[in-house]
Length: 261
Image (tube, rainbow, N blue to C red; front, side, top):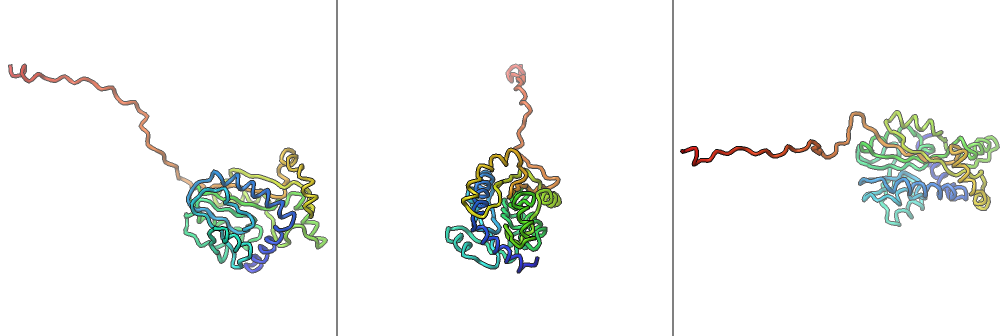
């Protein structure tokens, strides 16, 4: 998948997110991202792609950006109109940020629609500070939606965007491990069957609780939270002196008058 095809696939994803199934996914991801990002602190954070989701809405960092592709869509312009800062990246595999300059990077459905997902991850690792954090959203191929997509490719009736190359959770964890990005938490969601109408998706909303309990790894969407680990680095705190102070001792003083005597 070259860069031009990658941009077209991302645009196809943007359109799919406006569908009933896309709205179902956005609702779950927005709630999960709000919970994950609320307690991540620092100064600089960026969300790459998918402006339909405000991934940094609950985060309190002073500097937050939205990275876009060369093709500015109406959604991206609307995002800017709401007062957000937009950094237009010519290519997600070449981010216009200095090395070790960002505290948080959020990648909602970027890797599976990128021309070079490994290079995108390498760029993310480069721009993150030590102990910086990354959150990745993706479609789970080991789910009912993934099975429906596989059947759709045979019958030419795709359920998810056709250009996506969906990455399994174990595979993604291997990629992150190679870059010293340690996974701390992972979440799965959207257990409803792959219906196309909002009415049927809402009818099966009760499956979410059962899915989290009985088949937690079969959700249609996953979210991975990882931290950049730097070998040999230790966080240094205040150098508290835990040794008890010595008790003051009396020092004999010579009486000057008696000395003269």
